[in-house]
Length: 245
Image 1 (tube, rainbow, N blue to C red):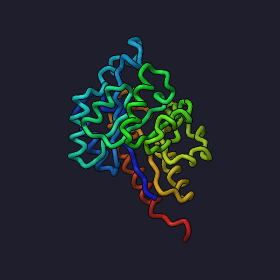
Image 2: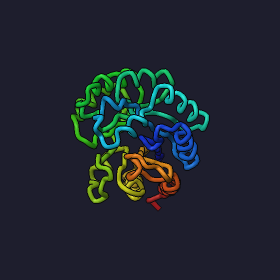
Image 3: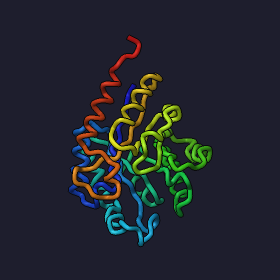
Image 4: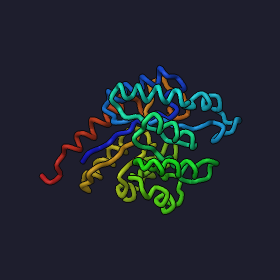
């Protein structure tokens, strides 16, 4: 079994390119296969009255910064891709050469102004998509939109943090991916172990990652790079384990 570990940066780069590059570099050194950022416009998704509006606005990933971070990730030999939340984001991500896309749970609901147009634009790229539907949504419709894309659906609970006891492992192991919002690294470790027992060929693990002193809205449910390194080491041990002996 092969595992593909995605370090979800989200807003943990805090709008600071130095921090973003440090996260990319340290996630690569920890063994992650990819770093994922989010391309959204604060005005599309959040009210100006949001308690963390200033931080959210600061954490917008601009086209210019996305290009810089993609180039830096390439130099570090780690894949860079994004969740796209508006159509023009897809256009730009195509220009800088991403190889895949993440489809966020929120986008799958098709309730935000640009969700459907964004999904259709991603679909036209014919590139692989990693899909979370932790908030619900019409899976048949999502399947139809991405009928010509390679799809990996991730089990996901859209709570921050997601209580460990809420994870339905019977449902989880029916997925080939796990987008985890629980605290610590126990849940993705257990998912990997269970999938190994089912003789899965490949899985995707996505986990929010932060620097030690991060203070943003995603920080409380993110793991440090040190914990990411430990998780990846444990995952590699499971990959090598032979249950038939």
